[in-house]
Image (cartoon, rainbow over all chains, first blue to last red; front, side, top):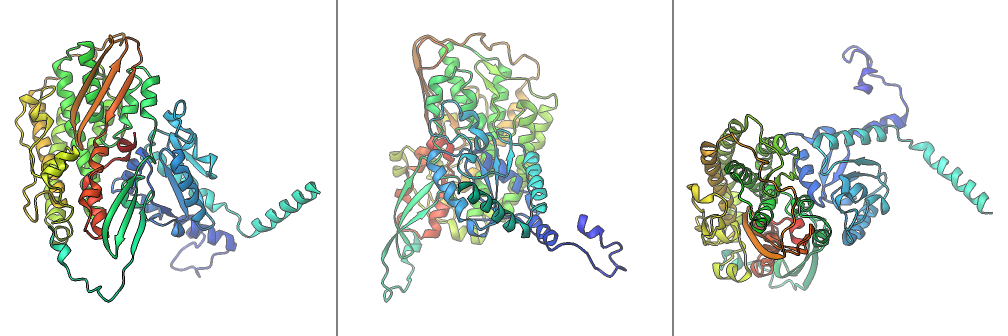
Length: 180
Length: 383
């Protein structure tokens, strides 16, 4: 419990934590990620098993949301076909910022078993949307998906919120200078 | 017809336009990536057009390129909830082409694994149907038991969901030494939970109100559309390939074929289709118990696997009773190590085709239940 340790004795201390605004925001964001419940193929069944009683995905603070407008991250669980790719991209665009993508299973990572002759299969979902965490396996074990979730949380905790805009601005200016 | 159609809605003063609405492809209750184009008159469904192809994974192309043995993992991924059952008709057809007789032990292990997978499939079907109707707790109970079955499958095959366990002429490996005890403890646990689910979900008044008299599929319509499996038996017809043309060693077991009787509504409604699945789990438990009692753990499961699989030019259609219905493979061989063509008769594809027929005249909320009661897997619909 990283943040609570700083309180010292929780009953006698004054209850003051010194930290940056960024740390508090990131702490809150990492511990309540709402995901878009959206199954594509075989991995979705394994994903259902993760959501059920044995593995209990909700202890990470995740709640399934049926709408992209209410979700923080998206789990692409299964084979993305050419016909579905259009919809996956549109769903990603409908999610509000900040948003994250977890690619679950070999098919979503790189085409998986359908890599060689799959004329209708997209060879990796990262060709259409940016992916933050890749979980390998066909299908991945539930433990693998839980580790992917832990990695995503540690990624969110290191996020820079306030300086980000300045950095992007500086980068853009640098680009403009180059272009000129 | 259903009582629900006679409900006075009092919309006379309100002009209602015909509306076309899209359900899916990412809607949580379409069980995958199915898109339904629904035409609505107010709240009443007047037409449903299913759009498929969002999970077309080029199965037949792979059947042209892969050898007979390499094709088995792709067959797993057709109906990914019941992989063991899906492998069986293909393997059985190939054994007939190559004229192989498999040992008794292999037959018994296949029967036990197929029946356990049937239980696992029906657990998912009932659980997700419960979620569609708004009941979340049975989902947790049923998935807890499913983990036990999956742990046994994993011990034998190494996979949790896609097993690649059946081989042409045998199995990929022997079962663990504690196999019989594991099977019996699973059967005991499944029976306990099913008793609970019967009270909690099936005879729950809210659930009965939602599902009885909804989505009635008459027996003649079911036959005309070629519907099979629990959907056909829910309409009151006792057709089961395990009894009608007993393949493998199914003639040695004593079991019944549960059919829908219209206990709380009309024969062939959503409730009947669902309760047939519950009774089938019990029948599968009985088959597993008998098979465990008859089976001997002595023997080799690899001895009849051929070194080279090169059937002569021939063709065969082999079918078996999948949890969802009749799954058949039409295999054409041309004397090489690669099949000339393998065509799968997908159960879910045929069962889904009946949805425009049975959902007209019901409310939009009932359409979700009708779709849930069909128990489709999109991997098998689109292939």
